[in-house]
Length: 193
Image (tube, rainbow, N blue to C red):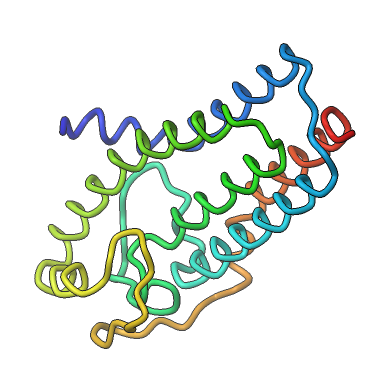
């Protein structure tokens, strides 16, 4: 993979999710589609679960995950990272599934799965190469024991433990939380019948 292209995708990653959501919402408006309150509430609960996972994960990074240049002060293997290498991205996936459920249209799943596969098939290897180069054997051991995207039941035992900073994690996620709340308010007024 071209490192410059991967860096570009990494730096612009938030726009892909916003673009996927806007594409689906425009399709719903054009096709005059609606959703029901039970689907909306179920989707909202998924969104809350996914965003909670993001907040907790961000707390173990002390809120230093919203960056445009890769960096890491330490190899985080605590909290959710002890069970999965990419809990923030799993949180994104759960949030996106929540949006799909809330809107209850089949094409949202296609749009979000395509966006998710495109984005993370580029970003994750890019980040992993950086971590491997920076932390060497420490990261290699972690990578060999903990899965990339599906949480395991066995906790990673090695590495330095990190104390989470929940306030910093929350503050780093506040922008996304506000965007999601606004999106759900708009969805409610435009599409819930």
